[in-house]
Image (cartoon, rainbow, N blue to C red; front, side, top):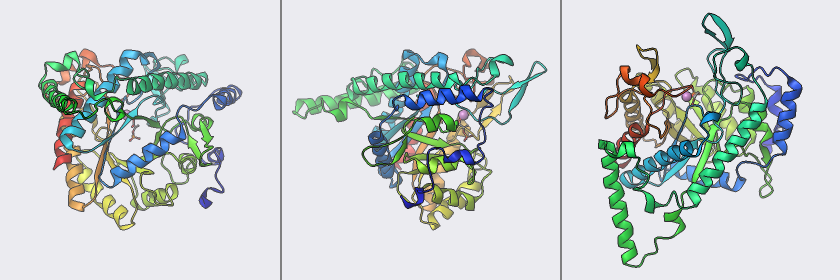
Length: 448
Ligand code: PEP
Ligand code: CO
């Protein structure tokens, strides 16, 4: 760890940090962070190492990464039903990908800490008044009035508590039988069951049940942890560096530093400057890291960042999450694949088909078209096959609820229907049915 001699969990403070809230009261801000720094870590370094090992398998094409959840989690939606429905749809997708796609799936939620958002502008105009932008529930309130938009550091403490409560329930569900393969049919939701996707899922679940019964009959134990428990990991964008620093702890097992706010952290497309504070902070923590790469990138800089974050070229450490848009992926992905391959860098390639396919519908809603999302995914797979690289994962914004935020899909959700149940405070998410449909399509791509 020679290269980390000049790193410590505060060394990022000497570098410019973009996208930080303007906390009005520095003393209060520091006090909150000191409080968080004394609280227990949210995850354990051993779990983080486990995830890294699983991601290393995905680099080699022996596993597949499924990462997904809300664009922005909200404190007011930190409830048992919401957590359960998000977990359910991710487990359903994972079963589809494992069974129909034939690969073990590494399950990572955008959950239990996804409370901080980068914004394109510091302020926005609401009813003619300029007010601070919403930067996620860990900074301010989404309510469009100036007062509510003033960043409040106690929200970080609240975020820590919400993340702990969410993680606690996720652990209970995944270890306590809810995630058991014996319950694969029970994960299907009422409102999805009658749909074409719900029925396809039901058929697949029946086949799994038959296989389990058969194993039972011939005396193969079906109450093993492999069948009764599921490993589920958490992730969020590492954005507010004070918060991330406060949860960064030295592991007593290997002496390394881990950001124990989540298992995996990613760097947003807007904060990945090679000389910036985010890269400085993340180079020193041993978690698996994601990095978003959008159309505005410089290939040499991307290579230099990867080398800075992963100087030992350890597989599983770096996941490149490309988000070029259906229109531009053919232009941007192949040169990047070639450059990374030529440099011999071990990275896991994942596709975020959401963030560069956003547009405003006529109704004014921010939306995404199912067909465009699917089209970027298809291109992602085809371009990898053409280059001889491994398409190893996907990254979605989705929810288990029956929302109407993205148009298209089997039900052909239209512009006019967006207002029926448009819930997101940030980016539009796939609903449960659209998520299952996506999973069936990806499973076919993985298998071929
Ligand atoms: C996000 O994942 O919600 C996000 C802001 O993405 P990006 O950094 O790719 O724009
Ligand atoms: Co988003």
